[in-house]
Image 1 (cartoon, rainbow, N blue to C red):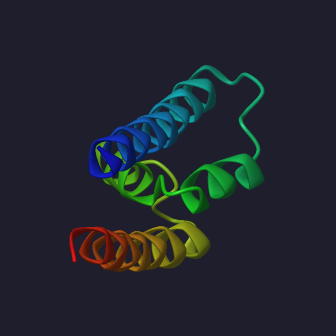
Image 2: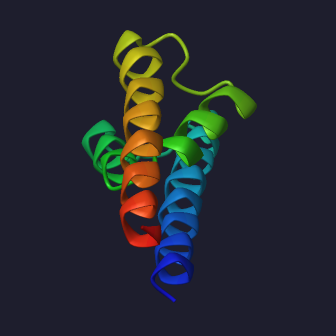
Length: 92
């Protein structure tokens, strides 16, 4: 049960970050007011880095910003390791 809840939370947070990145790309293309970078980083830090990294590459958005190129994948790796450790603890 705990794993199912954790999986659902991870799915939702990654979907939110993915959708925020997509929305920001569309706002940028239309010349409208953008989503603050701080918001994008916070959504990635809240276990949404996988979705943010996927969106970054899929939509080619923020790929020239070194902060996104470095920290989104780094956060993703750290979050995967942490999630795996938590899952192992729950299973043992």
